[in-house]
Image 1 (cartoon, rainbow, N blue to C red):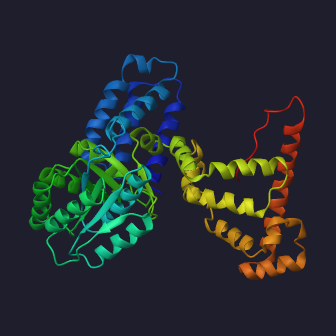
Image 2: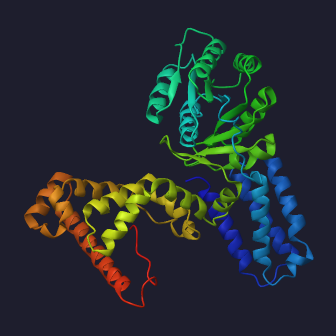
Image 3: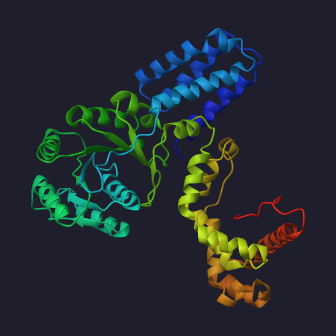
Length: 447
């Protein structure tokens, strides 16, 4: 998980600061030395670290901080504020023209950064906001790049314009724009070719497209796992093309996170989105304050709420509430709730967004396959068994275990857990129905 090591180090530093009743200038300097080392180990640009520490030191050694009743908390507050400034101070949206005009977005980046997939992710996100995007296949060099864009476009329900790999990218882009004008598309996303390294030919091709078409947004896709190299790539692309923003991919991987903390400071250009997984829905708006909170081990409850609102079906939730009140909750509802939780991402990531949970989860192994096993058991039940769990006798359980490929003890454990949940819900339902107690108890909606 991104920033895990950095978060752990920050939490230890903060724990030591909060443990002191009073802070001396020497205490602050010692803590900032640890912060500096932690950032450098996370592959944050050296100049960025130097300026970051100098700014915090200047603010933290003032008399207002050292003489306050909670000096440790004051220093943490300063670190958090400066971290937000470092990441961009405010959320920056992709700049789009009015819906009755065409916005042209050029995606660029090195090969392997996930540019083609990110183009499709972005198209899906814009489609969900009411836009009509057209993906344009201009990577005519990488084998299967066009096919990859077409497959991902189809999954997103977004059209893809392609002329194969025998035409110049500029000519393809021009033809795509004409196609967009005739067919009422209002966003054109050009997927350009990447290279293994920056070369003159690559830049000339991108510059040619930019000079001949009115590109409204030039978006650079950067692999966060390449660390300091990601910052260097961003700097070079910006120098040659003047980029408008960056999308960081693979931020969910085992990355030290230095790129996210350096790109804005080095290029002056904002991070627009971050790729947090391989699914086409795994593209998140970049919020500097939320990312700072995550890095400093303070959780990210707002993103968790956003994920829940995006994935949970309101009508299903209301239907479930009615069933709970009538004590009619069955395995179909259990399965439905599990699937909605799975859509939000891995359990480790979800729990890591809850303030204070990150450090507690450090040595806890959460078996993500357990959900799949539970699903398999429920899918092995007949419709009648799912709707009427009370009919599950030993012979039925043996058949279900065989169908799911699990030991019968797992089936027994799930049925027991389900029975306990139902009993608890029945108790809540009873409490809700008693006069004078209405509204004092909140019904549970997940497990």
